[in-house]
Image 1 (cartoon, rainbow, N blue to C red):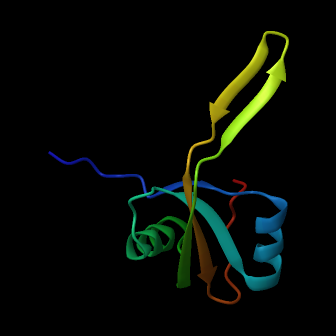
Image 2 (image 1 turned 90 degrees about the vertical axis):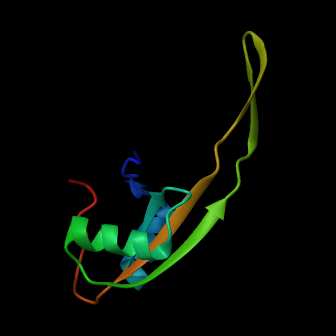
Length: 98
């Protein structure tokens, strides 16, 4: 039995994503790596009740990170993520803070 996958993981709230939202009416979400543009579009339309014009995706690779602590050098890895840039119809908004 196959379970339903969670397409939208969380909205991405950064300075760059806020500028894109204000200037181009696009919203940025972290999505499941295996989800397609059609699945992302239908998930946003049903969850937020808006008309989606376009969906652009990008996959950011994982990065190696290291930091110095009292116990010495700690190394780790940031996980890879898939971002979806969603353009919605002019005049519509998505309230991502509630």
